[in-house]
Each structure stands twice: as structure tokens, then as C-alpha cells.
Image (cartoon, rainbow, N blue to C red; front, side, top):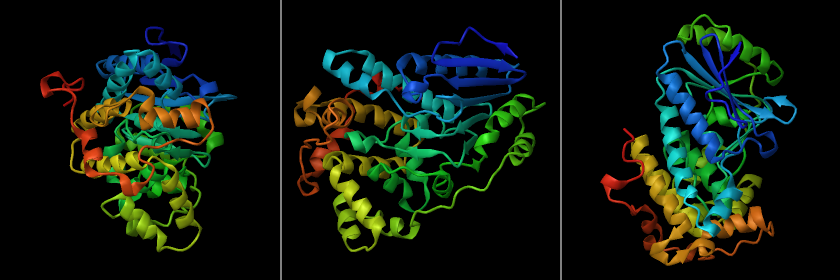
Length: 371
């Protein structure tokens, strides 16, 4: 076992064990929420290991409050977003550019990248795990794309990977911000295998002891730790039926015709989130279904600029729905966001379309080099 101090930082611990490079996200009190220094440390390590012939695979996990595992990553540092906007900090722009570039790197990584998605896996945590060759969940996994809760949209490639879930499940997950467990994650094809949580440490050590990391070897390693996932509970037929509509308003109207607790809960979620950003999110996923990952991430980079400076609506900083959502749910915690507009019926196509106009010419786009 050898520590590699070149890439180590307090919140991202890297270690090379044999031919396996290991990453431990080490910010347990914040559920390993990603900061800009963490994103930079992850990118630097992955780029170096990609070109190192001594490294054959990479594994990533999160540190829990009681030791390794128990929490993977709760997303981006939302309080940083709010503070950065109010003080005009340019690092906010760097955060999204570098995070999306990191997501792209992981999706296209040339060596096996294995994500131990134990505990909380949300937002930015999905961005650093959905591109993995093997996405491991456990019975205690809590997975979500919760961005619409705060008037944002499911970024980190969400418009690409959510668009590729079966039966409009990705649209349901994005629009409602609901949390799912391992069984539903597998059903939505957002995970590949379920491991027994108490054996994760053993699995981690055994992975480091592998003689090789080809498909056959990884499959044999995986089989030793599989456990039955909790039963999937989502009504996939109802989701496919209701979320196939072309607007969120039409989805709500379809849900009104449904009966049962699921429909009521879903309606409640859609009625509490930003009407504008719900329609933007649906448009994002529908567009993302026809895009390469690189193009979708470039689109997200355009969108996130508009979220904090909604120029086409002449709303800036605290006046945007995204900043209002963060204020209401994270900063003041009054849970009473004042959305503008307040009703789905008042969202116009022009309001939505402006989020998809790039603030940059193609040659100057911050993610122009993504292939």
C-alpha cells in the first residue's frame, strides 16, 4: 500500500494499491459535497493515471461519518453557489466549467472506473459516478437528482444520462427530485450491481488485490459481493404514461387523472418547484436525448450561466429563480420560495427557449474542447 501525495488534498485522498488507483472523497460532515478544489484534485489525478501504464483501473468511494463508505457524494456545494453570486466571484464560472469537463472525462475514461455509490448519491455525486464502467449501489443507497428543488436543472450530464433511462423515468426523477433506492436505481438503469454494505471494505480490498482488470476479472470479482437489491417500487407504467407528454403542464394534467398515493405525491412535488425551471428541465432532457454527451454538457454550461444571470428575462443575481430556490431551501430555510412566474400556465416558450441560447460564440465556449 502506498500513498501518492502528488494528488492528495484534505478532501480528496488518493492512493495507489498495486495496479489500482483509489480515490476517497473525504468531506464527511458535508456528505462529500464537491468544492472547486475537490474537482481540480479529481481531474488532476484522473488525467495523470490515464497516462500512467502502471495503473490499470480506478475506484472511487466516499468517507462516511464513521469511516469509509456510508456516504458517497451529496452534490455540489450549494452554499458556495449562493455566496459566489452575491459577491461576484468568478470562481463560480470555473466551478461549472471544470465540473462538467470532469464529468466528460469520467464518461470517456480509457481505463475501468468503478464507483461505490453507497449512501447519499445526489446531483454532482451522480456526475462523478454515472460514467463509471461499474456503478455499485447498496441497500442503503439514496439516489436523486434534486436540482429542481432549488430552481436549478439536473446538470453534470443529467440531460444526457436521464434521457437514456427507460420509460421516461429520467424525466420523472429530474422533475420531482424524488429519492430512490437501489432497486429503483437498477430498474432505471442508473446502477449496475448491488453489493452488501457491510462487505464493501472487503470488496474494496479485494479489488485492489486483483491481478488484472479486464472484463472477465471484474465480473468474477463482482459476483463475490452481489446481494439482492431491495424491491423496485416505482410504477414504471404510470411514469411512462404520464411523463411522455410534451410539457410539464400536460404532465400535471395527466397526473390529475391518475389515482393513488404515487400520483398525489408526484403532483405535490411538481406544484412546489419552480414552474419555469420545470419546463426548462423537461426541454433539456428532450434535447439531450438527441445529443452527444459533449454537446449536452456544452448546452448545460449555457443553461447554468442563464440560471444565475437570466438576461433574456432581465433577472440577475438574487432575482433569479435559482438564487431564490437556494435562499428558501438552503440559506433562510423558510421553504417558501417565490417563483416567477408562480404558475405553469404562465410559462411561455420564449421564457424557456432563452436558456438554450449560448452566451458564447462556438470558438470561445468554455467547453469547446470536449470531443
